[in-house]
Image (cartoon, rainbow, N blue to C red; front, side, top):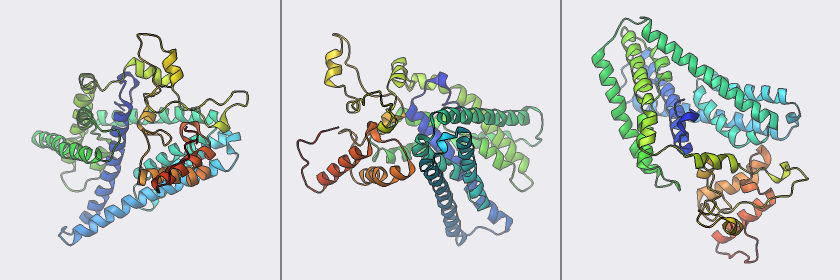
Length: 397
């Protein structure tokens, strides 16, 4: 919630990384808690023979939750893509909410992780189904989801704050609280930086060290941890609750309060120029959605470059205009851009997604191209990978 505050002008890539890590951490925490709680109820000591079973159970619950979210998200996208429900925005929004809640309820009924299922269902819906919605539903759904999220976060922090200041808990251990805070911060050092180091080997847009520091400093959440602490068994339950609550208060007040100065010092805040580009460089709509009276505009120049016409139109002494949008789309390389072509698994998935998935489930065609342009481009890359030289007279997009 801190990173999502528009007043912080946070880098969109940084916000995506912090939010994604936080949601997955919450889901993993719930799954691990359930696994270990099961062994506690069985009153058995966890020996070496139970460790492989616990790991397999954790992997099974995680993969099952992901699968449930993906299937329900694809089912929702298929329904919205191949029906005319967009003619009825009221039913469209109702079904969208029901499918989102259904992914959570289905996973919970199967003793899986509802949060993880809901997260991946949302990823699928954002990739495919958001482009199947009518214009009215797109705006309304975004506003409603943001409002509900804001209200839910307010109630969560209100509940924890009342528990901290109303004397609800009696057991406190200052030493245990200090050890817990230091352990969380120390453990995140061996979590954030090594994983980012490995991820940079495969990422086209690297995660700089200063961004990794912000992820380590401001990425710790505690609402789910506090909820799990209330289900802890044993006679020391109050100690677990108060310690977890104290960690949440520390990360919210201290780390959250210092997030804005840290972003400013490390220069991770977006400038007014970036925000202006956000408003001007919106993702183009597919050709099928353009009004008939508006001629089709050619795609923009490759990512981060300016066309010849734009260079000619630029005034002397001013930097040439750029087509690089300062949004999350800027961090998703385009298949049609020579700077964004990816080989191997990435290129295969982009081609598979364009050929088979998007015609069935919906989604935005890259750079405003229609399906025939996409198929032609993918065939050119396939020919290039197989050693065949493409036709030099082929129009480059």
